[in-house]
Amino acid sequence: MKVEELVSLLYKQGVKLVEFIYVDYTGIARGKTIVLEQLASRLSDGMGITRAMPASTMRDEIVAVKGFDAIGEFRLVPDLSSLRVLPQTPWVATVMCDYQMQDGTPLEFDGRVILQKQIKRLAKLGLTAKFSYENEFSLYEKDENKRLKPYRPNICFSTESMEDVYVFLPEILEDLQRVGIEPIAYYPEAGAGQHELPVKPKEALEAADDLLRFKRVLKSVVKKHGLYATFAPKPNLDQAGNGAHLHVSLWQGEKNALYAEDDAMKLSQLGYWFVGGLLKHMPALLAFSCASLNSYERLKPSHWSSAYVAFGQDNRETCIRIPSTFASDPAQTLNIELKASDACCNPYLACSALLAAGIEGIEQQIMPTQLLDSDPALLSQTQREALGITRLPQSLTEALEALQQDELFGEMLGKIGLETYLKVKQRDVAYFSDKTPAEIAAAYRDLY
Ligand code: GLU
Ligand code: MG
Image (cartoon, rainbow, N blue to C red; front, side, top):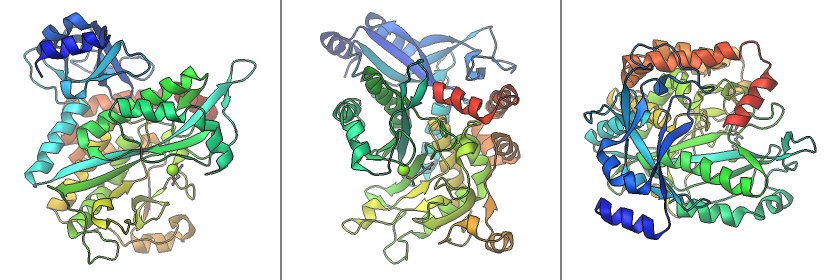
């Protein structure tokens, strides 16, 4: 469709504003909004954005990185295929952007640009990836002092808790569909006010865009009903955490390249190698998939969130789970799940890291450690060592240390990207160093 036609169509629908959105290393979606009439001229020019923004923390501090400062401008250039009208404010359209130089050169530190590069690397192996985030979230209401308190106690999978959400669930489902997300199920989870809504897998870039759209749509619907939704990994320290388990499958055309009929788990040789690459890079991968301080409150042994570098079939205590396939169509349903993943991440970087590690696994034919069919926390240290099972990083600092040692991800981010990523996250670590875990949890709850 020509841009004039698109503008005229949006105009007829009542759209007046178009947001140019990007996601920085904090995982927060940010952007600038233009009036619809400006869209045609801004399509290739993009929106100007100060060069300091890529170095921003979640509290809007700018960390010191040469080249990311108050002088000069980058451009936010929209990817029109990602344009959606916001269901709750239908006079606003929103579009995802890539960071570019003023001459149109993509900027290599930008997560969305990085993911497009990894997709191309995968294509060289004749493969495409599909991803889906399995979103868990916690609902809150305000108490008499206007403080947030969990919305109703939950009983996992209970009809009582379903009824709490049925009041606005049709609106959530409809709004998700209106932005192109296809929910496949809903259920109450184990934490206070905690619920889950898995969605259909999509091609990598759209799936990463969808995580941001999902969070926004859901928050916006429940807000209308006087509630607040958070995707923070551990908003209540004494309750189950919110995972955003990341599922990936690899495709050769219509064929699921992870599938092999003759394997006990139905995982192909290529699938084993992919898992091998993930496990090899897991400690550093967590710097992207579990990218907040609060993420490590969630990753505790025997909490179904995973705490060890291991893999197993339907094992909810290993960071990689191979979900059992469904008998009606095993070849379509086989996928690999990263449990050590939450929604505080920059989804482009999390998906990129997963692809980079998996591609290395395929190229170097890395076989994973032994398949585990028990909770690694219940094994002795000697048993774990014999099986090659190590503990996941236990803090953001440990994950960042692993990232500093990891050449693959250093290359993926580029020099300035790596320096900035580390500094942004280390600033969070320093800022929260004198805060209690409850204060940290509250800060993430309120922002994510
Ligand atoms: N809430 C758990 C987590 O933190 C996951 C529970 C489940 O397996 O769905 O990942
Ligand atoms: Mg769940």
